[in-house]
Image 1: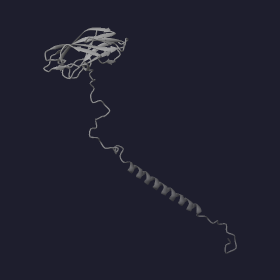
Image 2: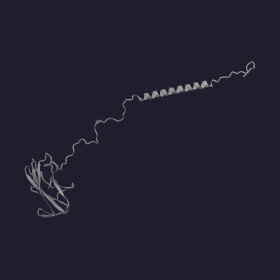
Image 3: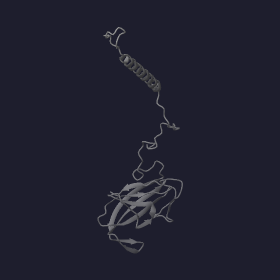
Length: 204
């Protein structure tokens, strides 16, 4: 650019572009800080107190302590074949055992179908006030392996057969088992004398 006097000017024109760039960067930085600060505040407000209790969508049960998978009692189940109940109205005893391949049953000779007959005599005393009826189903023999055997034959000393209050009766009972069967005990039960509970008597 020439001066009015024709002498070249040595003055340089200054540019304002760096100033605008600096102002733009400052505004952008300020806006970014405002956004970060506002977002952080909103985040902490949304979190709430650290000790706030968690919410639950489950409905409480009527009995919070109930556990349906637990056994309601810790008491073991009694074994009805080992100890007679205190309410038993009979006294029992066993005497003598024998075995053989044949059996004389009221004049009829029976032959073992499984290997051998095993028999014993059970004495029953009725100490109650009611008459007790006898039946073959009242007796079971028990093997040393836990097996049970129903009677093949039985003979009772009383008619009916029944045991009146205060009376004593005997029952000759027999089972038909294999040759290698080892019998350990015989059990007796009835609805009146033992209340349906089986009383087990050892054979030896």
